[in-house]
Image (cartoon, rainbow, N blue to C red; front, side):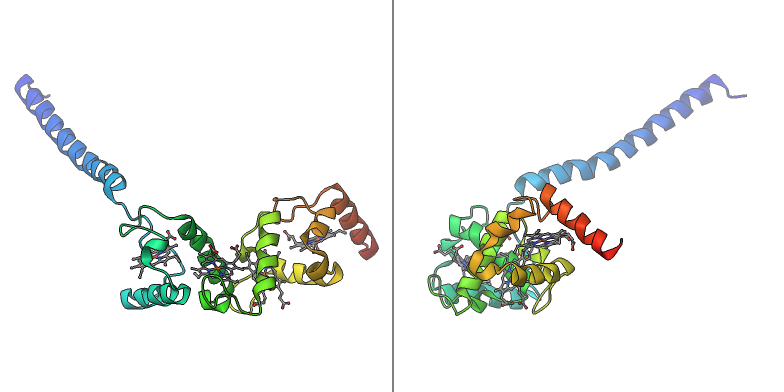
Length: 198
Ligand code: HEC
Ligand code: HEC
Ligand code: HEC
Ligand code: HEC
């Protein structure tokens, strides 16, 4: 049996524990909310193009900046809160570089001049734009292709992609849908399966 006095005491205790728990639970939520509001450079250390120690990262930034012959604010402000058009473009360029396992100088001599692979690179950017893919859909690092990359290698050859371009791929694949097949594409696939007896 619990006496009335003990009961009150128990309730008080319960309230105290509940209160403390609430404080503990609330705190991280509050500080998290504050963090997302005040922490500006969500960009910091986010891009996989920047690898290694702080020094190595800084060296990468220096190489990129001097190669392109620009100042830091060509791409972003000091706080990394505002990115210029070139800065936004560079994010895509970084994704491309990571997919290919290279740095900017693989294609760039400077901002406006390019190496011999310029046309190839431009075709690839155009292909990715048309099909709604990123470079890593097909590229998995230096000189490595994904399974899909291998498939398109065959398609590039049989479809004379280099001269005839990406439009051709749309005969069987849907634009911007990462090589999903259209109706004709499915017919082709079924015919191929039929021929293979699958
Ligand atoms: C050609 C464009 C460009 C130039 C020039 C440039 N940056 Fe950046 N910087 C970027 C981009 C893009 C990012 C990554 C943003 C992201 O992916 O969120 C970045 C990220 C950074 C970061 C974060 C690094 C990390 O590890 O995440 C720092 C610090 C930075 N830049 C400093 C500088 C400084 C200092 C200079 C000048 C010496 C400079 N940047 C020049 C485009 C540029
Ligand atoms: C695979 C080749 C390739 C790589 C790697 C590459 N770029 Fe580019 N970049 C190009 C091509 C081609 C263009 C021109 C076509 C265009 O603007 O889309 C270009 C254009 C740009 C532009 C716009 C230039 C202008 O006239 O405004 C910027 C900025 C840029 N690149 C930054 C970078 C940075 C930074 C890196 C490294 C992180 C990089 N690129 C890596 C091929 C490349
Ligand atoms: C649909 C698949 C696919 C996509 C998407 C793709 N590539 Fe490629 N890429 C290939 C294939 C296949 C080759 C040819 C490899 C070979 O012939 O050995 C190639 C070759 C290249 C080459 C010349 C070879 C080399 O490694 O230097 C460059 C440069 C290149 N791609 C850049 C890019 C860039 C940049 C993107 C993203 C904008 C991209 N690719 C997106 C499939 C793709
Ligand atoms: C005549 C029809 C046809 C044309 C044109 C065609 N393809 Fe395909 N493609 C197919 C079929 C069918 C498949 C599915 C069978 C398979 O995966 O092997 C396929 C699959 C693919 C895949 C794999 C997709 C995935 O998600 O696994 C890639 C990548 C691809 N094609 C790239 C290309 C490229 C690049 C071009 C243009 C140069 C092209 N194709 C033109 C019929 C076509």
